[in-house]
Length: 314
Image: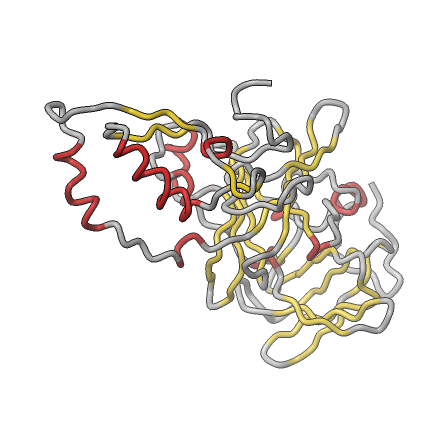
């Protein structure tokens, strides 16, 4: 198959048409094989897909190197003969409207997932799966951003979509881990509060659908359905006293009388407003104690598009 015509000059290391069009059309299942930096002979080739860009330069050691457009939809590449990967670089983009933006390339960072974590997740025996899956604020090689991970073993392609890429599933396709069925991607620059979803392209007639993160740590209020990046580590727990006495209270010889309750319908403020968890702690716990209960058993606490749902009935 012939290579795409280059409007500037021919690059002997350019990709075949099929590879570039797979990225541009959003149906490439292995984006890290194409995008980012790759060794070619004694040099490096860098490829990016930025459909909103009129011009893209690569910044290396303070110098700007203009990239060559290989596809009119925004696929660019640059050959650096005297560089060997990996090395740090940034992307300087000029939009069609003249706006200048500086980016870190997501495909310059390989999102880490240890073999042990991958094994446990694939086996279904990982006891802290939330530490690996979902959206986590983190830092890689001194660059801050968000690491995304989702389990979708039967998808042909999974992308992170959000306001940061105009909900365009072609922009941030993820890396597939074949041993576990998990997809991962680190997106530099994202901060707490960023809205996102996953776009999945299936093998079934190339059906594409956007899904909320099943391991999201925060979400929009209904009827909106986007997930939200949230730092769950900033909360300072103050339950050491309770934890220290838990084993004694919950031993086989301790009394047990459980009060089963659905928090959303147990009591309302002003006849309609839900109580907060703080308010529930101040009202529900004393009530259960007065009634002679030793434990409170919570019915599902997840929110649903229909407020009448308790999570296990129609």
